Length: 361
Image (tube, rainbow, N blue to C red; front, side, top):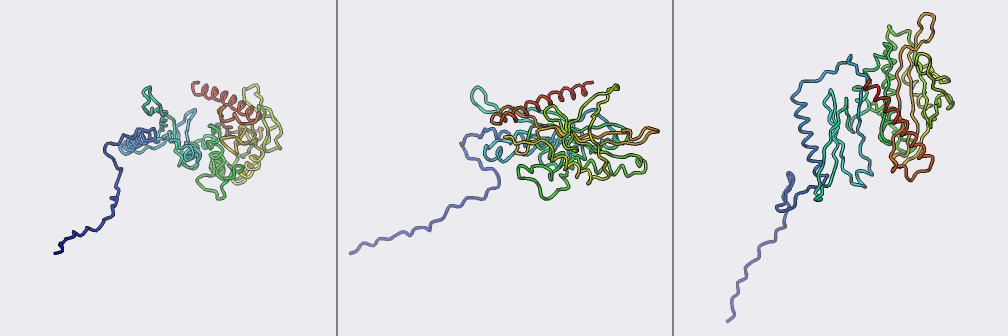
């Protein structure tokens, strides 16, 4: 007789589904990730938590507008470029932390020990103010520059320097988003109120104070010149050469420099834009629209004192310095660009010694 064979039915096949992830997944037995990027991320989280705890447990800081200091150092972090972030895959090693009354910059330095293990060394620097890559020009002006304006109307002189490597955003900070990057093709079409530039923001406050009755006898004039290759050129007078001389009283004068009367912030920006088009620029490996000269903008406040007409009462100066350069950045450049870089670095070195003397004197 035929054999009865019972067949056990197969259970329906179930597809394997990945459980939803609610956080980091750890694999048992997998080697620990000790890459520089991971170590830097952990350090950032730790210092951010420490900073948040400190800011939460302290009293609100009220800045004293009358507080004066001879030199104030403010640091602004630039965002990483696409080349640095995507193509090279470099880690962000600059970590700014703002504590209201002062700021810290943490620099993470990846290093390799003798046994080839990777570690990250943290170095801390303190400054008067620090701003991250998300800060606007308006925030920087409100915290670091606005308090200089009343002193100028009281007969003082104030100067604002923009110092940094080429391509770090000095001209963007000084002149705003609408007047930078034209050669590189990234000039902003829509002007952002938060990134108008320190020139315009300061001019608004200057003319606002000039409209007050107590300052009705003060007139305002503007001059703009550049320092290029050891020469001074008037950008508002067809780049005519001017001189820098010191009188018997030790005051520095600029014979031949033209000064133009202005009555509003908008009129001032029109003059600056016309002068900026005459400024020496060039293309480097770090910046397609690099400033190759130091631009000096002077707002002079003048008034009549007795028989003396148009005597200078106060002065506000903005200096957009040319960017410092490494030799590696100009190794493929032409001879003229290399000579410009050497001249720029020499002048910046001299400026550093002047600032050091002011700070210690």
